[in-house]
Amino acid sequence: MAVQTHRGSCHCGNVAFEVDLDLSAGGGKCNCSICRKTRNWSASVKPEAFRLLTDPGATTDYSRNGVVHWVFCSTCGVRPYYHGDIPEAGGAFVGVQLACLDGVDDAQLAAAPVRYANGRDNDWWHEPSAAEKAFL
Ligand SMILES: [Zn+2]
Image 1 (cartoon, rainbow, N blue to C red):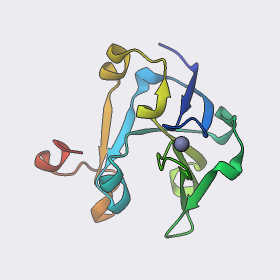
Image 2: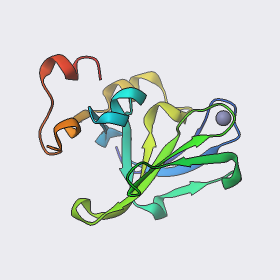
Image 3: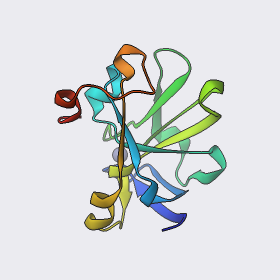
């Protein structure tokens, strides 16, 4: 497969976006303090591959460390994307929740590979235990 333009949104529709990404490249899951609680499964893209189509005022920005900003819809609470700038990880990025993409068929999502990261132990380049991976 190749890079395609997808549309995505929150639950209520106040937040909608367009993103250029290759779904066959899959996405990441992680056991860090926020990914685990939000069951984050996301693909990271460069900021220029992401376009917010709705009023930025419809969202709330949550950041605990000032590095990664978790954006959620102020009305329905769904978290369609997050963004940050981490030089060690390639600079500025937007993480798009694959579950928020609209119009992608189930087989395509099911075939997207999952990469796991052990963020809880600040060991981002290794996977968590098999038991933990099973429910992330
Ligand atoms: Zn919403």
